[in-house]
Image (tube, rainbow, N blue to C red):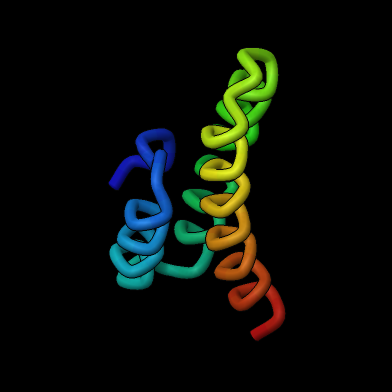
Length: 74
């Protein structure tokens, strides 16, 4: 899954599972790119006052950050 195509919690969880097959540096890069993309989406939703979109992006980011923390902290 491409990091910039994540838009739902299910896709975030699926991406994490798919990326587990990759070396840690690749996983971290994908996670970083996905988080950056979702942060941009979150800002867009905030501008449009789309609270549901903002919350969905926040939940996706939380899933990806949890995986990032797990990789970085062993």
